[in-house]
Image (cartoon, rainbow, N blue to C red; front, side, top):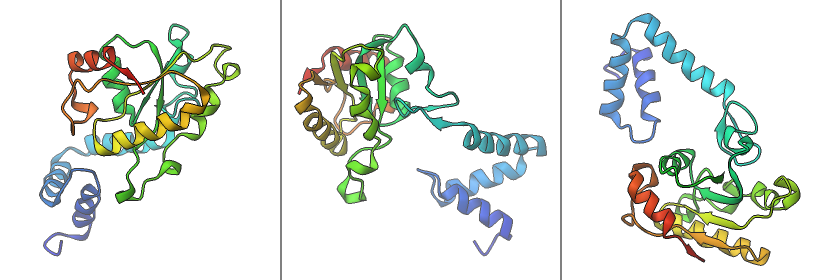
Length: 204
């Protein structure tokens, strides 16, 4: 970054930290910012500060929210007897688009990956067992746990680990059907495919 002044070089370096952003993309983003009016840049910076200051993890399901518990956990119309486990908050959005699942969620914020040094303790699983007790679920028994991790090696390993974890509790644990290509990501699955995957889930 010797070709650029220090502030520009620093901005490029920060953009390169973002997932999926390489050197050339980082440069394009940095120069896009430089071309924007001052008020737009300040609005962007304020949005970044605001999201870090106001967004927290839901104490029940681990969703990203500005109110705790989140709107899904406090919605009286949701079916509290079903919990769907997903890897990331944006996976929840993919399932919600189908309008066919009305239960609750549990977000792990990752998946098991020994190669990347991510083990069970790095996932948000600690509060899962607690919320399965009826006294912590408005007195409602959990009828089904749906595991909707991604159809990848890491997603499968995570699903199998959770299934083994829940087996002693004698609960119905299902896995969404693989109505999507192996190796794909839930973030990019269309509503119809996701709807079919949910409808054809199987017990583990």
